[in-house]
Length: 393
Image 1: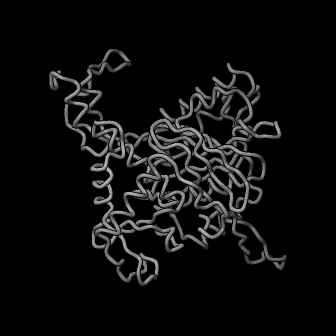
Image 2 (image 1 turned 120 degrees about the vertical axis):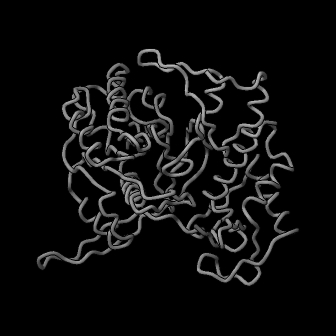
Image 3 (image 1 turned 90 degrees about the vertical axis):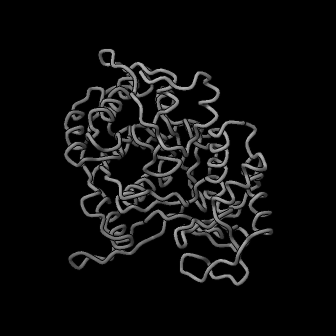
């Protein structure tokens, strides 16, 4: 097996989240297991995303909240957008993503929601597919094999299970061992439903909150949260918020705001016009606490950006990509990254620690609309959205 530098600290110092993967043997196969050396592990391919900072290949996420909080509207919008290559909250997929939406709650109202999305966002073609009927993942796993086959047939990269309660089966979701069996079924879906040559499948589970009035935890056994790579709590409000509660390798605490916009659809067969809703990213003015007080590294990173813009900023170009403002200035995103590194945003000394600190801070600032970004002539530009009251892509 190829050997790396004698000193592991040297390896750690030059490996970061933005490094290109180094081609080397990926361990030794031992039956169904793979034995990795330290060199293999440190030179693993960098983390990739379907939706930056949220949905990554081969993982499982839980999006939960009280009934009627808008979680299904939000996830359907995210699914439809991913299939079109469009995201939310300044987080954009690199390309269209193939999505299978499992609407186990049934077809009621789903057609109107999809029609509204189609009219508002466009046609995702065959990148979006759905199952709108009862699906039982388990235990017992009556439809698991069929769902795996459907995911492979669609060549799905993201499967959304809506909801846990409707797909759980005959078991008791409060019982740890039975919730464990449901998690095992999701793991099997992720592993066997993935298509060779494509990124590994991500499974999204939509779940209800507990019956307690404070709604502090999802319903059922806590084993589900322990198995999840990402946990997002959806809270109804003006605007509503998707709060990143837990994240394995990404920033926690981001508050992703959205609103349900009423959409009127044409009548069918002489009936009255239908009305449904589409989840959309909230505008800055729609939240009284949109620019809540920042602390720690996000606050530092924003301060460094303000200093850099004051020192080196250029007036933003006249373009539909940028807000119309005569004095708004911005700088290249990479110059801001370098400024944060030079002024020690991270207490860590390795490139990985520096990159992670900047990535986490910038994602929080984008999600909370303190900053906005756009591409111009191949260069990513960043500016302070709070100053102008506007936001970008």
